[in-house]
Image (cartoon, rainbow, N blue to C red; front, side):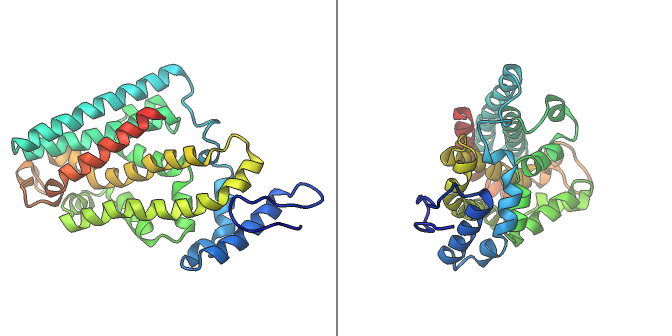
Length: 287
């Protein structure tokens, strides 16, 4: 197969239309040449292409939209309630009612996730009304769109270790306490990981466009990236906040509302988290 260039945006030329496999091979070579500082992408490029090929994020206009107007309407209602919780969090925080403020922060994150997964069709309605909804939703964010597979294929050690810790904490109260007591520095590292994850994704999107546009004319690189950002951000915010659903309300031997002082990491970083969350809420309203 002859090609005019391996650079993004330029077309492949041959006597007949290039097959998906041929185009993929050419772009893997381009990735290896263009991203010398990220050998994991080049090393795992073939697996990344295959894992992404049939995932919903590659065709944001097909199968990933809410199944019906009612489901999308419920999703939008959750987003509205989430914005209310964000506002309540700010008000309570300003009055130094820290455990109550963090509870509403956790609720704002959870309801934003519920709204997003309903609008995008990642979950059925019954999934968001279960008592285990924080865990169901974290899994939905990761498993329904290829995020988990993509980050694992990239060899992202930060994601892999974080995800293992979250899965362990789902049924282990001691692990949940550890996450709940994450230091301010630890939370800042989690928040910084959002940009790290997105930088990796965007490097791949830069090279995927021509391949996927050839295969699926519905593929919209900008829309795919816009849909990826809430998934990544909400996953990270869910990891930070999900243990606080109960610890902020009920006294217990492991952790109690009285532990929510200005010295606790989540309290120190609360307003920064709210600001990030409110930005994602505005993005989701536009999807």
